[in-house]
Image 1 (tube, rainbow over the protein chains, first blue to last red):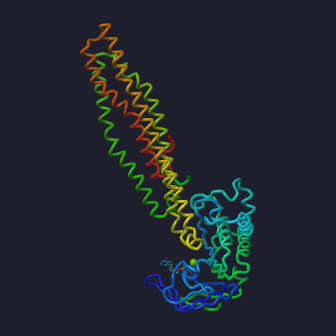
Image 2 (tube, helix red, strand yellow):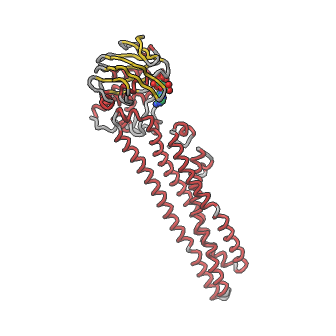
Image 3 (tube, rainbow over the protein chains, first blue to last red):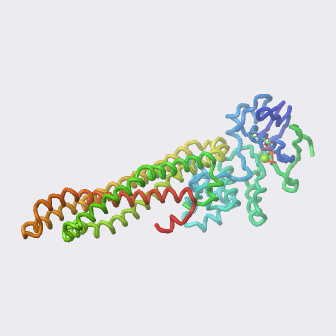
Length: 212
Length: 221
Ligand SMILES: Nc1ncnc2c1ncn2[C@@H]1O[C@H](COP(=O)(O)OP(=O)(O)OP(=O)(O)O)[C@@H](O)[C@H]1O
Ligand SMILES: [Mg+2]
């Protein structure tokens, strides 16, 4: 699905973050996004996904123009996956009814199956308060399974691997590949090497986007 | 829950921290203003009466104190149970605060994945758990207090029986027994309150330990 942004200007209070920004991402395209810390990359993703409403400019995903409509079409994986203090299963389904086969497929694609098989209660294991009983990599893969289960056409990634050490990144990268296959992807990263599979890489600077 | 560490404090949202602290402050100050200062007064009355009765009739005084041998271990046990229940209910309350604490971080997930109902359900469960624990804690202490009340009612009854037999055997005048019975309230009263005092002390330490992190208060329970 095509993402189209025209004349997007956004501020937090007095602080101008995005300035007359325009961007088109074709359906099935993978676009990388670089930029200095505090440049507004996360803010842009939140606007696209419909978490924030843009007051100036338009953002559309195909025909979806309002924030509420866009939220239906987007799945996002953030830097530190926050988990609900409940079971792994509910963290993935988010309380929605989901076929058991679908849940299993999502866990398999998110590289969770091997780990789940070692847990006596499997997907019904409690993740702990603040996700205290799972590692950062496991939490991130649960968040990816959640995104896979939503099966949204647009995937937004906000530095999904940056908070993790090398050991777990292999499984995580495979999980991300499975999540983004065949989707329209916008991938924010600090490290250009993580954006190698992108069709194009842009840089956010001074509130605008530039080709890298 | 392993949350009674400084790590938890750092991770908790400010709102959850404040609400935690308020809960604990309320418990602690209730103890300090209510129970703590009543204790010396009762103790004074108890000992003064005891010394005086001792001079009149040592045998009868010993009889009046007899229930104490039962009551004291019972009170200690009661205190332990109440302390444990209080700690449980506080843990449940913390669970609820934790839930409120993770909300800001979860906001994007809740909106993008339409997880409002999951959140409500989770919060309701945490609330139920806390309510259950709090009710249980109240019920347990009420029950234990009733039992200790019955136990301490033994004191005047014993006094009456033993004293009565002393009088019929001519070891004691009826007038002295009358004085004894009248003053026995000063002895049985504190006895009746003993489990209560120990219980609220335990409750106080349970709340207090939450404010200090894991501390020496925890070890004695
Ligand atoms: N909710 C908010 N309220 C006020 N200011 C905010 C808010 N969120 C972000 N900001 C500010 O807006 C600017 C852009 O933030 P944003 O998180 O979008 O940057 P970023 O490019 O994602 O940075 P990073 O690479 O560090 O993740 C920052 O200066 C930040 O302090
Ligand atoms: Mg960011």
